[in-house]
Length: 358
Image (cartoon, rainbow, N blue to C red; front, side):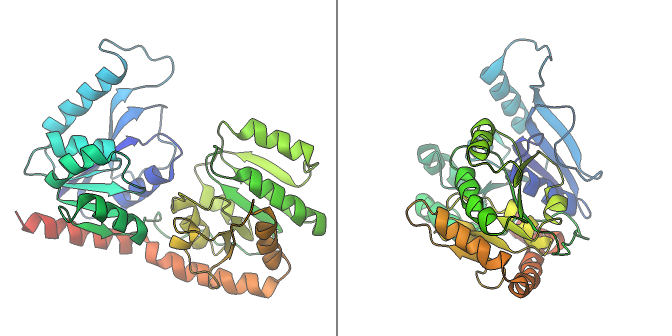
């Protein structure tokens, strides 16, 4: 079976791209797999790609690269249309609503077309119009499945399959470093300022603990200023971006997720795979969708600004080594459901089932 994954960019630091590349690598052990990146923004993909996965891109958007006309969005749409019309695969998996709409419109009818969605339906009009031409939608959580099912109104089957980790063995934390880590894009809405303010309370009570922030983005300058204003320069460290976030999490004893909403699961499950407990916030679309509070994590109540409740949750683990170790064992158990062979088997079953309908 030939499987094509179509994603916006395989070259950036995004959890959805990481999840798709992990899945593609595992499926490539048994199938012919390619990843098509609409945009190429750097020389090589940010995350490692299995050597058995074929890679290609449609538009070269690297800085300094000269392009022929047509330019910009028109050029991208033309390249995408040509790729879809000429596709010769058994299965096409698209990673964004905009790409899934184009798949529904232009991919050959003999191709099984699956939309892989992580968030809410962002373009309900085109979704309602074109998604019924697809074969299935796959989400990573029950909440997302329910939202997509309501929009599609039973016109298309919606399935839940969790994100895939990269193949084992996974690095494992020794849980002996007094480090709290957090990772992701430093952008508005991710609440890293709240985490820094919470850690100020932790550092005041337990000055031997440190906070490491991995990632980059437009909020970095403001966050650095906040660290300076709170006099936390000896406690909070900006570690930059890394393609091996899981390896860095394995150096920590706690991973913090400060955003209560729109949490993509890769950061969480990578932390769990290292045997590191997670501290975050309760919420209908937050970390609780991926965690088992009390068994692999501690979740704070998101009241007022949430700073004190997050600090209390962090301190509850900082001050209780036995509890940290117990949650670490539960984290490994939770992560096992995201092992690449387990997730790939569920995708393979879905793909074969959809193909057999034709």
